[in-house]
Length: 413
Image (cartoon, rainbow, N blue to C red; front, side):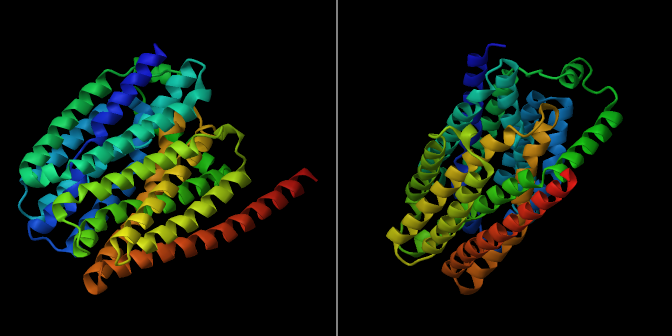
C-alpha cells in the first residue's frame, strides 16, 4: 500500500461527503414547503432513531465485510436519500429520505476513521493518526462551511435541483471509495478479504461476544465516547434551528449561509487547536478536564445562541463549535489507541449511537419548545442541560473511577 496515495484518496473521499449544500438549508426547504417546526424536529428525531438502531450493526458490517465496501454502500444510500428528499411530496417520503440519509452516515461513521487508522497501522505509521485525522476532520468541516456559503445558491435553485446535486455528489462518493485500498493488518482481515461471506454467522457471533466484553471491561472508554456525544449534541441542533432563529432576528434568510459558514470554520479551528499538542501524551485526568471545560463552555455558548442580538448569537455559536471541535479530536485520538483493529469500526460506532440516542430525545424537545415559546427558550434549555449534565456526569465519573481503583486494589491484595 502506498500510504501517501491512500491518505490523499481519504482526503478526496471526505471532500465528496462534506460538500452537500442541502444540509445547510434543509430546514428552510421544509418550512418553505409547508411543514411545521415540530415536524422538522420529528423528522430529525426519526433520523436519529434510525441511526441509533443501525449504527453498531453498520460498524460490525464494516469490520466483517470490509471498510471499503461499506463506504461504497454509503454513497449508494446517499443517492437514494437525495431522491426521496427532492421528489417526495408528503411527510412520509421526507421521513424515508431522512432514514436513508441516516443509514448512509451509519455506513461511513467509524468506518472511514477505522480505515484511516488501520492504513497507517499497516505501514507502521500509526503515530501519525492524530495529524492525519485532524486534517481529514478539518477538510470535512471546511467543506461543510463552503457548502453553507453556497446555501443562497441552493435556495435560488430550489429544493429539487439542489437534491439532484446531492445525488451526483453521492455517486462521486462511490467512486472515491472504490479508489481506496482495504488495509489488512490482522489474520481475520486477511481471511475476510479472501472469503468475505464465508462463515458469516459464526464470525458475527464471535464479533459480538468480543465487542460486548470490551464494553464491559473498558467503562472509562465508553464514558469518553458518551461525553464526546453530549458535547456534540447541541452543535448540530444549533446549526439547524438558527436557520429559523437568525432570520427572526433580522438576518436575511437568503444569506443564512454566511453565519453557518463562520460556525463551521470555528469548528475547524477548534480541531486545529486541539491537534496542536501531542495527544498521545494526554492522560485520562487531562482528557477529563478537557471534557469538563468544553462541556460547560459549550453549554454557555448554546445559551448565548438563543439571545436576541445577532452578535451575541454568533459569539455563542462560535464558542460552542470551537469547544466541540477541540473535544472531538482529543477523544478520537485517545480512544483509537484503545481499540483492536478487528473491532475498530464497531467500537467507534458506539460514539455515534450514543449521539443518536441523545438526539432522539433532545431534537423533538427543542423543536417543540421552539413552537410553543420561541427558539430562544429551546436554545437556553439545551445549553443549561449541557452545563448541568456535564457537572453531574463529571461527579459520577469521579465516583466510578474511585470505585474501580478500590476494586483493583482489593484484587491485588
